[in-house]
Every structure is written in C-alpha cells, then in structure tokens.
Image 1 (cartoon, helix red, strand yellow):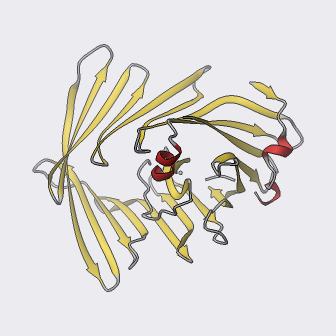
Image 2: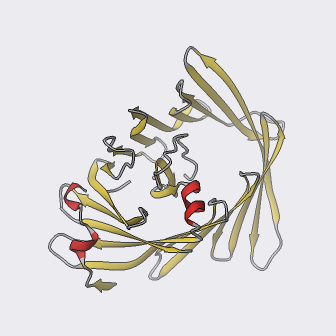
Image 3: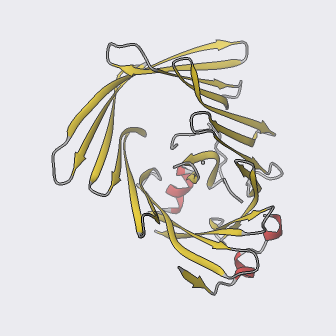
Length: 298
C-alpha cells in the first residue's frame, strides 16, 4: 500500500458536485461527438467504455486508469489497482487489462479483441497460463456461429464447443424488438435475449432469459436526447446497480451511482484538451472517496 501526497484540491476542482458506476457489451446506441466516456456503456462491469471517434482523433494508443482511495479524514492511498486500455489506429479497443489484489499478491487478467471491418470477430481472455478464445463467424444475415477454444500454455488450442446465435427483428408500434437465441448447433436454444429500441433507435431495455428463468435485466431512460439513467439487475447473482447522469450539458460529467443500495455521487475533471483527468466518487454515508486518475500514451 502506498501513501500518496497528492494535490487533492487541484485534482478535484469541481468536486463538491461530485461517483461510481458496470459485461462487456452494454452498448447504448447513443454517441455524442464530444463525449469521451460513453454513458451507459461498460466493460468488466464497472469500467468505462470510450468513444472510438475521439480516441482515433486524439491518436491515443494507451490509457491507464490508476485507482486510489481516500478514507474520510485520511490521506490518499494507492493500492496498485489499474485498468489498462490499448487501442488500434481506428480507436477500437484491442486490449484490456485489470491489475488487482489477488490471493496475497497483485494479479492480472487480460482481454484481447480482434475486428474485421469494424465488427468484432474474436475475443480472448487471459488469466495466468490459461487462455479462452471466442471466434465469431457470420453464417448469414441473422446467424452467427461462435467457436470456443481453450489453451493452457504452452499447449495447443482445444475446441470446447460451438454455439449458434440466431437474431430476429420485428416492430410493434414505435418499438423495434430484437430477439436473440443462443444454443448448441442443431439443438434447442438454452438462452434468449430480448432488446427493445425506441423510435430513435435508442435501446431502452434488455432481458436475458435462461429457459423460463429471468437472469439479467437492464433499463435505460433518456431526457433531451441524452441518457438519464441506466439500471442493471442480475437476478442470478442477486445484485443490482443504477447510474444517473446529468442532462444539463451535452458532456455528462456528474451524477449518482448506486450499487446494492450503497450510493455515491460522482464528477469528472478534464485536462485542457478536454480529456478525462480524474474521476471522483464520494460515498454519501461515509464521505469516503475513490479517485481514478487517467494517464495517456500517444
């Protein structure tokens, strides 16, 4: 654990408004030209998704989030937690790493992404010497075949299984409804995902069902063309959280995040180039803070 003598006042200029906020594929369909951190879009549950257009424009190759904490009335501590993003020349995320406290030591996980014509075609998960790879092959306009492989270094790839994902779209009044069925090849689907989109093609809800059991539920609300709230409830894990965003400005840089009834307020501090410099979270009950510092490599 490192005690950091940090210029707290400078890092949090606009603080007194000031939070928190979470697989990997929560896409909202909303993109503001100047919004660097995308509202309602997360990776690994709690880490922000970034606007690929701005990452490309700024020619950012790597972004590191340094996570620190400041208990109420105490100095800032750096526990070594990091989130590391690497981007290709088009601003697409190709590598995501998490450094965190494991069993008595710091541990790291990696995710790697591959794209063809802007569409993700492969995804790898690295944990120690174990690698899992998911490859996607489009069979036709409505069907994707996913192959899942595993490898334990220095061994060869082994095929675990293949799954078929079938998507169908229909409209009811002003709503667009997208149903996705997932299952083994030539076998009955075991999972159904239903997404609803409004007349502006903004996603407003998503449900994931395993058979007759509701597993995951998400909801989005919009005001003035901006995301106002995002709600996520995992019925299987019995967890829930919600994020509220400011809608006073196009750049949504403050709001509230509640996770299992523990609520925080948040605000983002920017550099002179209008890139996030710090993300500040404050617990309403304890007044403890968490500070995420952003560092860039070009």
